[in-house]
Length: 158
Image (cartoon, rainbow, N blue to C red; front, side, top):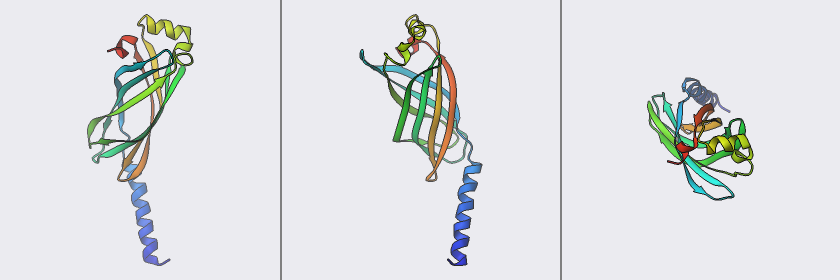
């Protein structure tokens, strides 16, 4: 390999690592607009949006989501969305559309306590744990997520 090629490869490597070190992770704000879109005795399907803020001066794309959802400590589903592209403008809020199914016999309704809380419209703790994958200048960048919020069934039935 010639010295010129080694120099170019080295400079490209520094640029890539430099980019990752100067990029700030988007800030999670909240989950919103949750609603039940389909229900059957076997499962129900929900959709909503994760709201984030991009503090960076460059835009990017959301290219994947892999997130476990827990209700009062019980894992109810995993959201896996690969291949979707959501454009993220620089220095602005952005929304990631999410959609998932829950099987009532296992997860959420498997616990009598959770069932009672939901049916009586009490608030339950919903925890989202996982990774959102961004693509910045064609470079994948994983943003960890661990957030807990409280929701009641009336919020999902809007």
